[in-house]
Length: 238
Image 1 (cartoon, one colour):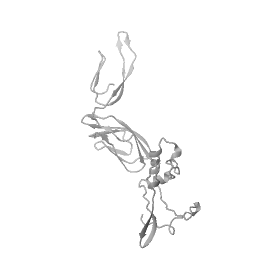
Image 2 (cartoon, helix red, strand yellow):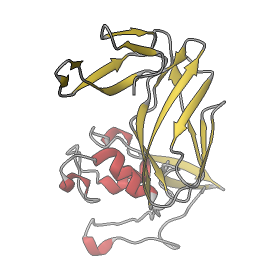
Image 3 (cartoon, one colour):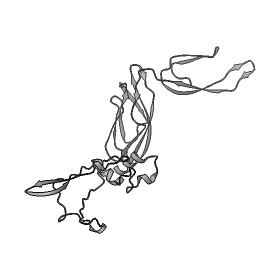
Image 4 (cartoon, one colour):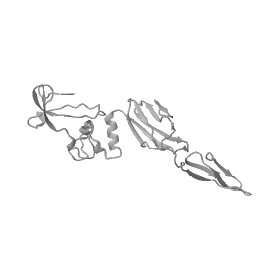
């Protein structure tokens, strides 16, 4: 069928009117004369959104952690008065007035379309893929290595060639494909309760909650010479 707002004059074959919805629409057309009906042809109508209608600016792929509470804000330029999202992934709730998508998901992948509306009409629909991963580390690896050589994603790999493993970069929130040596914790001397300590201040990434940081100390750098815990290290502040 023809898009809303478009009419066909069967006598002249002229399409006229003002389309109300943007998008691509395929319409079969054929002609008839005294001999009979001719073969049909698919006419593709590419209807651009009206100038000034909202354009959704969220990325095409959004990655989250399964089971975590989500607050995904659908955004657009210019701002929309309301949004339409379909189909809403099971387990989530969508507020068309605010564009907020909330709830929690199991592991899996969902695809939906969303568009914004303002006084000028509906904007073009955008297809978004929502991926829910079992752990925060799985999501981090997908964010950084999707479509890349799988060998780069190994936890002991160092894609930037700076000798810092992916696991440590994940735990500390360091850039993956840039040298991060200058961002590693640096030694300092601090006084605590009358004692001087050689200290390292480690700022872990709050998103890396599934990684445990274990500080170790050595006197000779041998593989068997690393120690941790009481008697070797003192945690001044946690």
